[in-house]
Length: 497
Image 1 (cartoon, helix red, strand yellow):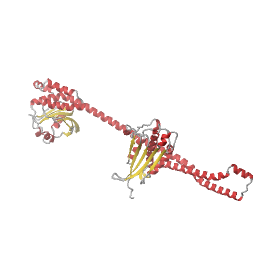
Image 2 (image 1 turned 180 degrees about the horizontal axis):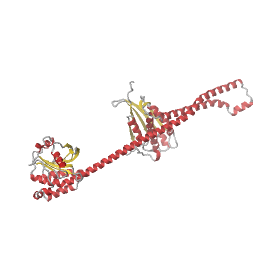
Image 3 (image 1 turned 120 degrees about the vertical axis):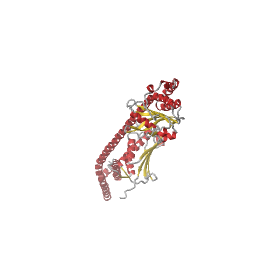
Image 4 (image 1 turned 45 degrees about the vertical axis):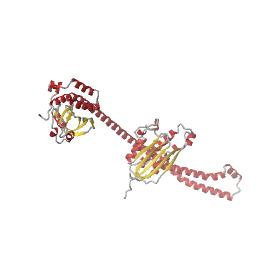
């Protein structure tokens, strides 16, 4: 007897007597058991019913998962019934296996019903198939699952036993396999369609994420560039008249001292002044002017120094970074605080937000200072917003009893993970709700109403830290108590040259 064959459909090839050996009760039970299940649940039910109805040990339902030169080379199991239950799904090569012979035969027959039968000594025909040895398989019968659209195989159903398969059992198996091949093809094609649809959805989601990333990055570049140019321009315009005032103030102080000294000498040499001069001196309160005029000049000098500090901080904050450079993180933090100073002051709704600094000695790091300042600005602005939100329902007295604060702490870390610096920005604001925390760094996600938030600040900050500087940005938040953002930036060893 031939070790393999492919037969026409049982309805035309099998003797009526043999078909009738499968009782209506058996077929009815088989159909009833499999009709109510779909998808992945269908395969183990079918495999269990096949082994039980045919009294064989193993049943395998597989899907072709790899082709080479229009020939199937690898199969993924959809269900492997071991006689006792379902074994975990796996993949296996088709070379030198009875399933490989079956599917090659199906490709050659161009869509006709294809079955392959080895009634006994199946291991002798495929000595290199280790799985047959492990299963102690003696016989094999399989049917190819043919796609009605392409007329090509997409999988198979096969049974194996540790005893020979008789001719009678073979015919009963062919009837059952042929009857349920069409249903199995439909289930498999539906599953493949669902898989393709999921892959398309995943591709669309990936594309959307890439578009959002690109958009946010463009917004970041434009935002930093525009802000930098604006602030740099304003700082430059302020700096010109400021330089004039600063240069003249020193002369004004000298002139004031000289004039007052000269007036003092007049008073010493001419103690008896004419009545008109005495009356005028009393009107202008000459003694108070002599005392207050130097103080006014000094106050103006302090104010000018403060404006110079603000201008310097604006220029530092607005740096446009074409390339990385060694930068001092503390300078960036301080310049950002100067820019935000107006938001930290007390207002009718809340008391002053106190900033506590705990700076450690840090090395300079290779970075883009302007981008880091943008991150500091985003995190500190969010901290101020969080504190203000926490104060909404509190009275002024309650706020004074529990002062608002933002703590900035820096640390130099040296451990097995490498040298790095940590910048921690913490607040005692409202905290971040638990349900919101997983989405905090999503592009365009915001919990702020109106124009207060665009959903770009934190996502851009993470991109700047992780992608542009090789660091990390994380947070720790407890609702009702506050939030801490932690930036870690690598410290690379200095170039010996």
